[in-house]
Image (tube, rainbow, N blue to C red):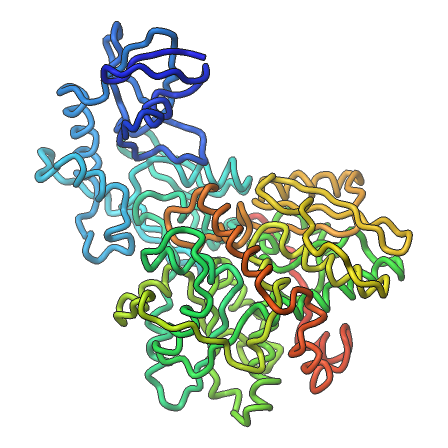
Length: 572
């Protein structure tokens, strides 16, 4: 332990603690900008500088370790002037379009300028005039807004292990860009959107599809159906001012009806359907000597990453579509048939935690209904903007139920949104299908939590099934390299592209730290415990769709509508 003095107050902390964290222990909030609690401190913005007695230069609190007897001052005149100078220099090169910016009122630079009382910038404004990048259906880059904090670079390279963003150039000419100045569409970007969550300003954002959805809602010839992803019920509350981890399933349904959607259905329904198809696919591979281990296919960011970097391992990936795309195919076939609606007049919208879902919806393989299966994908943030524009107050909304027939779901479907949830849902069904016995304890604690890689074993009538779970592409790479080397002795692997799973998706509310993701995940497990059905194969609506339409798992119609294939992609 080390004892030091900060602003006249003594504090004792562990050796190696930074001044920033030591100050937090005693309620002193040092302003930061390039710092992020889940990333390695780079100390490039110099906003968090403090005075240390005996040193001539100001030092960055986010990266400077404490020492015995250290005396720190966080609020002297020199410190305040240095912070204001650093922020004014950033503002001199930053577009002053806050009112039109997608991060207005949720921008760290904007909030910092207000906190430091900056009312004028003493330096000549010089914008660089860098071109914007609108090349992908998921992510928009506006380099003129970039403040060179490098949080996106750290996330892309060291958290996700993709490494398509780099600082290029020197000094005032430095810019964060894909390699050789390419657009994102021309490199091996997974479109996961984790860079968006890391960005403190509006330099990286999701493509905004809200206007397309507003137009569909206003078109009387369109029957607009919306599906709600598992994770959304635990995160949209944050967009509406509630605490992280607030479960708002019923209020979400009510809000969507008030926006004008004709039917509000649940992606959890097709999450249950995914488990039936994927579970049977796993059992078939085990029994008939298919390619093992089988890897889940619910995360489109992971799929695109695998197509770029591990095309040799594509046969290991389940052929099942994601729940979003299964729903899209069924809403324009099964639902259209039951409702007596021309599928050409159905506009299918999905509410997703994920920016890569926008890319997935536009893949050419996702037209098995004869139309584009999902017409528009909205992230949590986009839905939040629509709700605020419509003046909908969550506090005043009643609890309402999803619409039939694709609105009935189970707890197994709900936990899809947390890392390990797909695996746990699959094990609940695979165990009972394979053994014919009822599973006693439904909660597989071994695959829960935020550890990067988790493992478990399940006994199926004498056959030990070994499974693994990885979340975040950096952790996925470790398992995939083991698989390439022949050292991954598993039957089934769950990979989620985003840290924390879908609760940490690139389209989720900002901020999105691991602490917040943990709260969101716990909300989904709470939803699971409160559901009348907790196993996918017990869902009566799933039994009904097989009886009326799909006939059987892995059958001809199931293969046509619910399964797909993957594409080997180059890195550039």
